[in-house]
Structures are given as C-alpha cells and as structure tokens.
Image (cartoon, rainbow, N blue to C red; front, top):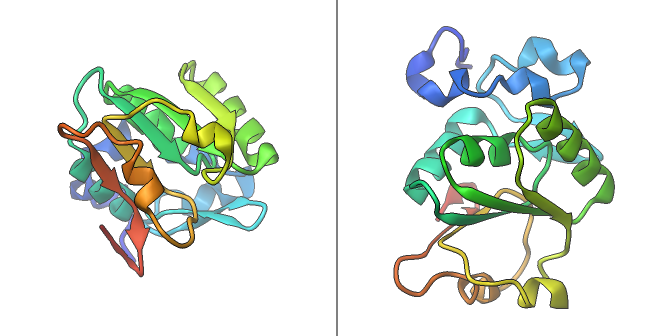
Amino acid sequence: MACLTDHAEIHPWIKIIPRNLFFHPELARFTHLDIPLPVGLGEMALAPSFLYSMIEKLDIQKGLKVIEVGTGNGYTAALLSVLGAKVKTIERNRELLRRSQENLQKLEIKLESEWMDVYSRDFAQLPLFDRILVTGGIEGNFEFLEKKLNPKDGILIFPFGGEWD
C-alpha cells in the first residue's frame, strides 16, 4: 500500500488540494494512503493514483468545459477546477451533493454542481462538454454520454471493469 506523503511521485496534485479536507474526520488518518475511501452513504472515492491517471488522460487545459458525473465528496471537482477547467458536476444523491458543496465552499472553490441523474431528461438537455469524467456508477450503454461530447476533440473517461477507458 503506497503512502502518498512518502511517495509524492504518485502525483504532485496531492499537494494542491488536501485530500483530508474532503473526508469525515474519523478517516483523516487514512487520507495519506493511496486507497479508495468511503465518502458516506455507501459510496467510495477512488484511490488517488487511479483518479490522477484518469484526470491526466483528460488533458485539462484552462477554460475547457468539463462535467464530472458522480460528485461524491467534491475532491475531483476541486482538482479539475484548480487545474483551470470550467467544471460542472452532477450527483444523484442529494445528501452527498450537499456535503460536497460544503467541502468546496470551505476552500472557496466555485463551480456549478447540481442534483441530477444521468438518465434524466435534464441531462439530455445539457450542452456539449469538452471533457466528461465519470467517477460515479453508470450502468448499461454509455452512448448517451458520447452525445454530450464536443465532436471536435472531446474526451470521455470512465472506470470500466476495473480498468479505465
């Protein structure tokens, strides 16, 4: 098990946004480890090295419109925002969304976040995005996500079958 504080080579982003600020205080002693952690309500946050590898594949550039599907505790959205993306994040669990908004507010990170299910009509009416990062669970066909991508150079990243694609 890698320790993030001992292995900064995992990624320098670990120093940009303190991961411990996004978890329940009882989990603070584990946030320096490169492991998935519970965010509550039966949901888990990805291990940092896995998350960072997904974000790197997005090739974030200042001003790109990015949507994160599955806000969780807000940590990923915070990273995307600090990297210069114009972030919209959606979460299907209202309580998790509320908690993530509190976490982001503490760090004075301003972005658009809202309760929404990707299978809803509301999602279908969203504009196109330059990047889509799925960090929450999605079942079935992913083609509806591709329809929300900028056709010129859009990138979609999601965990799939233990890998990412």
